[in-house]
Length: 364
Ligand code: GDP
Image (tube, rainbow, N blue to C red):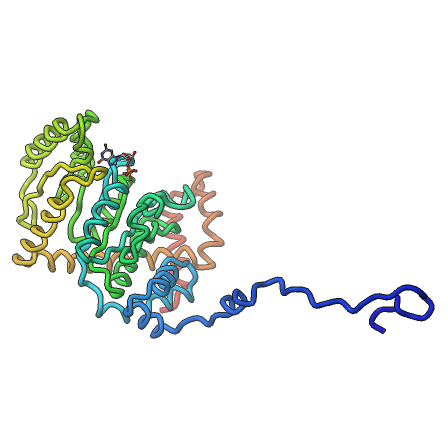
């Protein structure tokens, strides 16, 4: 009997049949959770149609550390490659507070209004420590984040700078295949991140501020040599004169450098990201640069050099990962490290031992 309380012996007691409770999971969500994984061809088809949801999912695969995701990602990238390469890739760097996000918002809206499609990516090697990147955060680019022709993606967070940079470079391929004709890669001057960005863009833009007393600090870090254009932000209000002065200091400093490989002389401009002044001039400068370097073939040469660089980077990364993830190596590594710390063996002997262990036990 369903309800023993309804038995004769409990007179006066009547328990009704209950009604079924509502399911604890929203049926729509259940269906979504059970969604079948797309095949590589389905991914590629979605990307080529400019489907942003599918593009985002593919980027997530690129960023994933799981071997099966990586394999799928590589297949997708391989299939997208023939459709990539058609964008202008622009690296944007500047110290925190230089106005990168304000400027990217302003540059981006200018481009969107001109009918372009813009992807904003970021490389932030510190993002693993800070658990989530401040670069490429949508809330920092309020206007742009609402545009359907803008795709904003924060920095991949896991891994070494080389790993983060490789993922961003692969994401560029996917964005280009999805029809984005302009790609921004944002970074801050941390460690080697600027060099990493430089190795994947056509034009490298350095945002500087006037009146900080260290206008030429970029020179020390070798950043100025990498810049194809230097732009002094916050040239508004009382700051206009100071910005102009800083610009002329930069121009004379640039004369101290040997001529660039491209034959292009880097330009120095002043602008205001906040008040949207001087934005068109910056874009015109980039247009002039691409026309100039396409004519003298440097544009393609630079991309070819970058492809070569990334081939070696990928080899190095794979070698490093295969070595450190090898079960024999990883189990012996700590003990060997301790022997070095105890001065029982030298670092070189230790390294050789580990390498021999790896090479003897690797497939040939
Ligand atoms: P980021 O750290 O390089 O991304 O810099 P932000 O874009 O967050 O800007 C830092 C601060 O500078 C913010 O308070 C902005 O409002 C301000 N700022 C950015 N661009 C300009 C500008 O063109 N003029 C002025 N006066 N302030 C600006």
